[in-house]
Image 1 (cartoon, helix red, strand yellow):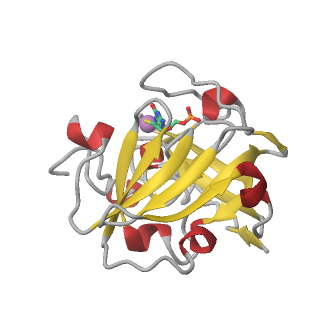
Image 2 (tube, rainbow, N blue to C red; image 1 turned 180 degrees about the vertical axis):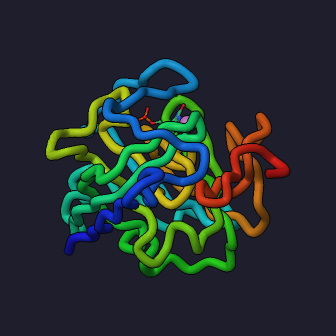
Length: 199
Ligand SMILES: Nc1nc2c(c(=O)[nH]1)N[C@H]1C(S)=C(S)[C@@H](COP(=O)(O)O)O[C@H]1N2
Ligand SMILES: [Mo]
């Protein structure tokens, strides 16, 4: 399966795929709140924890690779105002990982090696809207960009795409992750310019 979002280019006045306040970036900036962890796929695990603290599901690298793999082409938007159009990724849909998980939760916290967290409404990582990805433009995802694997939630600002992701915790009530606790918006829709709390 592949998910392709096609390009629409305005005749003048810029690109209609660029959300308000964003500029086009050709490179790929690295934005990390701390040092880059070196994570071996030999020891990597991904755990889904329910709102009651139970382990709902866990995969090692080999088990993840045995799941259906998908190619994703999408635009990404960082709150620091750069956007990249038509980036290509390969990974596993969050729908696949959440399949069969019983929960009453409305929210999730994504967790990363190194302690980074970010919160999302559960519906925002379902129905083909989010992935864990380990390839970027046909190459293994580099450590500084979250390798071996990161979240990709491209319809929200890129801080919601946790690098070095190692699990999700389902939550009945919304809680702030790392940047949200420092004043960034709870939801982070680039099309509504939800950069900071109150936007
Ligand atoms: N674990 C972790 N994930 C993270 C971050 C981080 O500091 N740690 N930074 C976030 C922010 S603010 C952005 S814009 C993107 C940057 O991803 P990149 O460095 O691949 O461009 O990762 C997000 N995910
Ligand atoms: Mo960011």
